[in-house]
Length: 185
Image 1 (cartoon, rainbow, N blue to C red):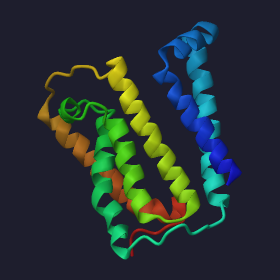
Image 2: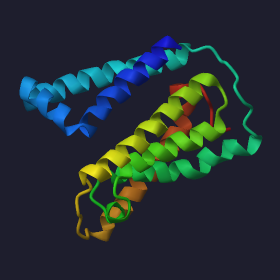
Image 3: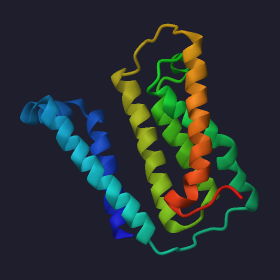
């Protein structure tokens, strides 16, 4: 459990650096733009490894027993989360409606998994990511970082949805291998 918590602190901590423009500026001045990105990436990778390893090694400590129907919530809403995730990277018209699609995807992913999992390690993992995404959205709104976007070709919307749905189907089939929990059959 210690590795999971340490990984969350490291991974989410480094991802909160951009919410503090003064801190980010000082780090960029010290390391240079490429150096800053390299350090950021290395620290984030270490945090991610600790999260994955820590979650895999964490003892199963039951906190609550989610009702059986909550297992269906991720199945119903994860396609939207993955479409939002793709929307953060592919030019599309959805980004004009959802100002921060990556953070919206993280919030949705974390929330639906919190509802469907009752063990301590899962609750720590998903609650931490949900809290991070909420803080980052608030910070982004304060900084005014949501760029104005004009209309783009609607075919890019179709591409965004298609990639998101293909990712969802692939993730459903790979979920047991990646995370030890089967969501199909």
